[in-house]
Structure formats: C-alpha cells, structure tokens
Image (cartoon, rainbow, N blue to C red; front, side, top):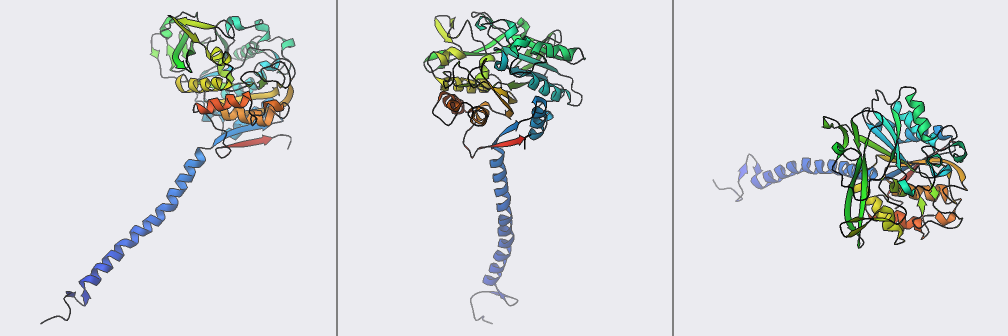
Length: 412
C-alpha cells in the first residue's frame, strides 16, 4: 500500500506535525521561565543600584544627646557597626580650644550608645595626635584638658580627660590616649617593641611622602597593645583576632582667622581630621630624612604646594592603605565659620556617613556655608578641591544621583 505523501504517518499524525507539537511544548516553559527571570533580574539590579547609594544622615536642632540618639536611630543602631567585644577608638579633633575640639557632649552621647550594646565587654578610647611640638599651647587649651574658659562653643561640663574619669568611676572601661610622634629616624617593627608608628613611604606627585598609624598601649589593660590596622595584640599571645573599630568624630571649622577667607585646604572636618591620625613632625612644613631622601608628611606634602586636592588624595590613600573608620560623625553643634577658635555659629547639627568626602560636602553645603558662603563646596574653592581630591582617590561621591540625605529636624 502506498501513502499519498512521502511523510510517514503515525496514527493519523504526520512526523512533521509531531515535531512541531514537541518543539512548541518545549518552548512554552523556556519562554515562560525567561519572562519570570526578567523581573527578578531587574529587581536585583535595582537593589544593587540602591545599595550603592551613599547615605548621609543629618539631625538638627536637638541638644547633643537628642541629636546623637536620633542619628543612630536613623542609621539602624550602633550595634550595626560595633560588636560587644570590640575595642572602640573614638578619634576626635583635639588640638584647638572652644569649637576647635570635638564637642565633648557629642562624644559622651556616642559612648552612651556603645555602652548600651548588650554584653559590651570592650574598651572605649578617646584619641588624637596633637603633634607634639606643633601644639602652640598647653594641654589646658586642647580637648584632652580644656579648662572652663576654653570650652566656649563646646560642652561645659567636661573635657575629654574628666569625661573618661567620670566613666571609670562608675566601672566603665573608658580612657583617653594622646598619640605622640615617634622620633623622625625611628624604625618600628611592631607591638613587641612597645608603642610606635607604622610608616608607609611612597612616591606622590614628584615627592617622597609618608603616612603612619599608631600602635599603642591600652590605658586600661596591662600588656594589651592596640594596632589600628591589625587589631588587638596581647603580651604572650600575639594578635588575638579581637578587632579594633574606629569612629572619626571631626569638628566643622574654617581653619582660618578672617571671614571671607579659606585655609589653603578649605574647611577642617572629616577629610582633614586624618591630619591627626598620622605623624606631623616639628611644625607645619617640616620633613624627615630617610637616608638621602627628604620625606614629606601629610601636611607638608599638601601645604608647601598649596594643593587642597593633595590633602584629599592623601586621605583617600590613608583609608585604602592604613585603616578605614567604620563611620564618621561630624559634631557640628557649633560651626567655626571664621576660625577654629573664635567666632562661631550655633548650628545644632550632627551628621554621619561611611565616607568623609560625601559627609564634608553635605556638611559644608547645608550647615556651614549658609553662614560662610565662601565655604560653599559648589564654588571653585579650596574646600571643593579638597573634597574632589578625596573622590579622585576613590573615596566618596558628590554626584546627586549617588547619594541621599536622611534627615530629622527636632524643630519640625
């Protein structure tokens, strides 16, 4: 028997039609799954994009304790950043009197938040390097030992030393530590040698420059050394795996003496607070020798060239090569728009961010520049150059699409 067509027939269905049915059936779940995957992939992409947005938290018009408490509520709580066994270093700005040193009430409010962490068993150390002989005045004019006449535009109840003593009298592990420069020709190997500075020498814009970070004795636990990068070292045990977490708490000041003028590097806040995290030997522009090579420190490398952007670039390198703070809090209860010591405006604001460049931009734009237009970071000024230098080094952003402000105002 001959078929009317060359195509074989199986129970009334041609092979060609059978293949079409099978292919169609197979294609349905494949295309269906693709359609299901597309929205999921888009959602993941959107989530990644959202997670890359930098947040700057800003709280205004409460007292220092209300502002800091609300700030951490916006941030998701201090326990998001600090673990119960951490050694916490609060690195403030200590070198100048009045609003020139970090607001002691704000520091107290942060300490209180840390101590509320369930089963907190770590230490809290308030630190800064006021640069030895570069300190133009006595300890009574710095944050560590500020006497009442030197607490204008600050918290009148305590200086840093008396605040730490207050906590210790109540059985809390809180102390101050003034970091001090090592001799310029020193070579430091590590915590077994005692206190010292780990130095990083490198080529920078046709100069040899060094940055450094401290390794220092705990004022609270005998035999314990605090390595800002590697963690806790204990005598007889070496590095224990216990972590050191650092919170930078800068001021917000114009580092100049006259209204309408800027310092060579612009505003003194989160980016420039790194000047107190490294060594600056023997004054503004001094250098140290390494063999026949003249080596600049963080200040002289930027100041002698008059380059605000160099200050920002060096901060970015510090964060990437030395250690990175877990976050920054700008304690702008007062803002020194004319100087770090004299005229100031009560701005009653605190801000926080996980990078210093975006934080400084927002603080300058929304807190200090309304009182000091010459510090507006949208102008082509030293403040902007400093911030852009840090961003150019890979830290932070001022692209409005890439950051947002999360704000709370007690007056509203």
